[in-house]
Image (cartoon, rainbow, N blue to C red):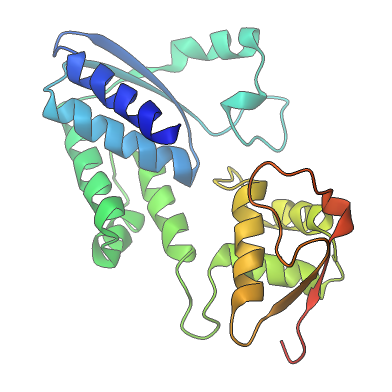
Length: 225
């Protein structure tokens, strides 16, 4: 389970020594950058001396590029030479970012998002993207919810069609997948009053593994939405 996996990861980090050579491979998306900040914060606590980072936001010939999982072994191997060593300044910056994500401190996240000389620039972009996910004062929706609503207004009425429209409209690299998007759609249907109506075998889209075909669902705007 997830808890056991996390415990194992923390045990492995606790067993590391300051002289261990650590090479981290990460995507540039919000989700991975938040994890990177936490891992680097842990390594800073361990006083790690030999940490290298390989962070990827694009690869020749792959468009759109969403992450390392799209690459074949030979393509991954070609990236190894692009890794760079991290200094204590990188690790201290990661500690600040990790604290901001953990506490959801909007002022620190905003400062990170507007930083122009950050030692880990993709962390600043991740902070900016996280702020976009917070509810806007005028709509009460974050960016992903707004994109889902735009897709439905444009005539997309199936989960797959909405996913394709949102995927095309959101700037890569994406931090979200189908599970996250379905949760946003369900949340829009759970509002009072609802913004979306979900018709299908169940009144909400399945969040994890399910035998229910997504083709059996139809999603439309709620009245007056």
